[in-house]
Length: 117
Image 1 (cartoon, rainbow, N blue to C red):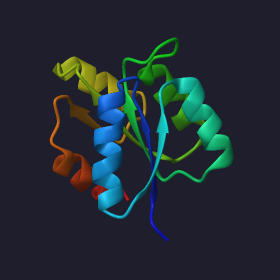
Image 2: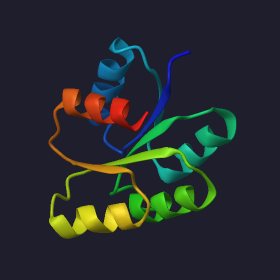
Image 3: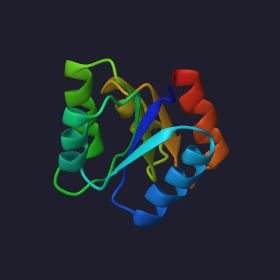
């Protein structure tokens, strides 16, 4: 049974690019545009890893990471345009398993997802 990846990003191009790449690599992929959509997905689907943008509408990815980590062991990889060391450190302190800066190489995300699984 393939692992399920939830891509949560408000940018449609990023969502579709990652979905296409990860689907081609054999993963089941679910998409969300916001924290609210991801929370809904998590109530109905068994998700193994979340690729989560930090800058989301209404609720940011860091707050969502803290919430997810408080209630589960789901894999969380933050994917963000914020590439400063402090941003990475804060993301990891909030409970993320990994942090990838945009622009990213899809193959790097694939490697990090596989390592996390």
